[in-house]
Image (tube, rainbow, N blue to C red; front, side, top):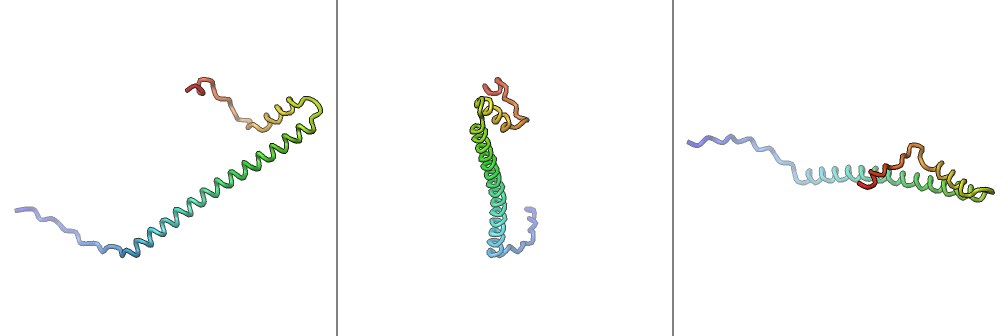
Length: 96
C-alpha cells in the first residue's frame, strides 16, 4: 500500500490587501534609502565644486599678483592643490 502523505495544516494566507501594503512599505523604504544615497552624492559634488572654485580664484589671484616668474607661481599653485599622498602610477601599471 502506498505511504500516506503527511498533510501539513494549511496556513491561512495573508489577505491580498495586506501583501500590497507590505510591498508599498518596502518600496517606500527603498526610496528613502535611495534618497539618502543621492543626497550624499549631491553634497560631495557641491563640495568638489566649491573646492574647484576656490582653487580657480586662488590661481587667478596668483597669476595677477605675480610680478616675476608666472610659470613658477603656477607650478607652486598646482603642487599646493595636488593631495600630499598622491603617488604617480608606475609605468608598468599604465600598460596593463
